[in-house]
Length: 118
Image (cartoon, rainbow, N blue to C red; front, side, top):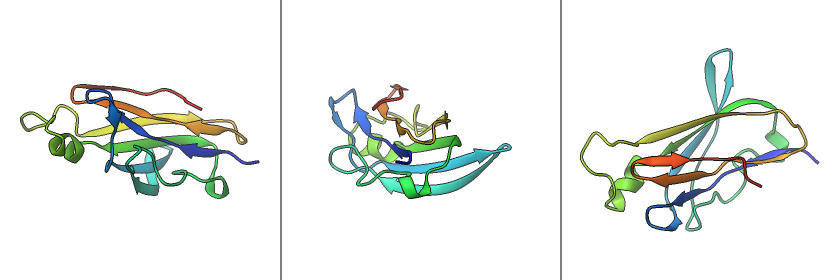
């Protein structure tokens, strides 16, 4: 078995999955970023498949960028421009080659949190 990476977004202000949020995944090395995947959340706030599947998995440093601005605007939560949260970057490391990493985003218009899930 090889490792893989999944994610999802929950709207904690509305108490529901966040559908339609664009997500980009970057591999980070020596201060540079290389985009390795891009996807959009479905009606369950998840991606339809792992954002980094087993056949492309490699340990290292990564960054997920959640483009939340359009979602917050569409749901009437945005407030005035500039938005307090528009793009939310989460930088993290994956050191276990055989593990499932799950990095979710818990989102509200004025705050967010994350954790290593299962």
